[in-house]
Length: 208
Image 1 (cartoon, rainbow, N blue to C red):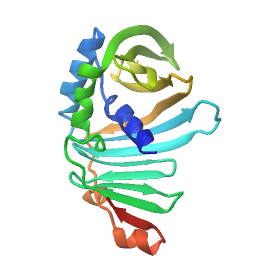
Image 2: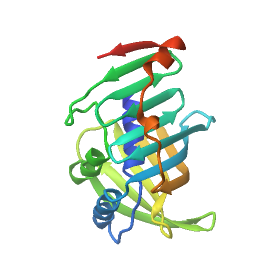
Image 3: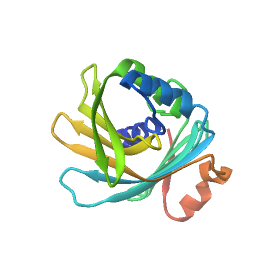
C-alpha cells in the first residue's frame, strides 16, 4: 500500500502544470512553474486494469505539506510528521522520515526525479472532448517494475488531462484529473492529525 501511495503522489506532484516544445523543456517549465504555486487542489478518478470500479480521490497541497484521500487511504504530511491512515484496517502509522528518506515524498523531491530517472519523449497529439491533448512518454532508465508512463496534457490550459502507468506485468493504472485549482486558501487544520479522534473511533495508532 505504501508503494501505491508513493506512486500516486508522484503522479499528482509531477503533473501540475506543463508547457513545452520538447519533453526536456516541458519538465524544466514544470519545475519552474510548480515551485511558484503556493497551494493547489486536485480531484481525480483512478482506474486499474481488471476493474470497472472508478475510485474518487483528492489532494490538497501547500508547498511541502499535503493531504491525500483516495480509496481507503488517507495520508497527511505537516512538514515534519507523516500520518498514513488505513480506513479498511482501522490503523494509523505515524513516522518522522528524514528529508532524504525514500519513505517521504514531497513536491520538491518529485520535481528532481525526472532529471535522472526517465527518458522523455513527445508522442502524438489528439483532440479529446473538444480539447487538444499532447501525450508525453516517460521510460525508466534503470530496472523498474514500471515499463512506461504516459502523460496527457491539455495544451490550452497547460494542465494534466490523464496519467497512465504501465507495469512490466501488463497491469495499468490510469488517473484522470476532474478538477484542478491553484492558489486557494487551505485551512492549516487539514494537515493536522487529531490522534484522540481516531483512537475514539477505534483506530490503532502506531509510531515507527
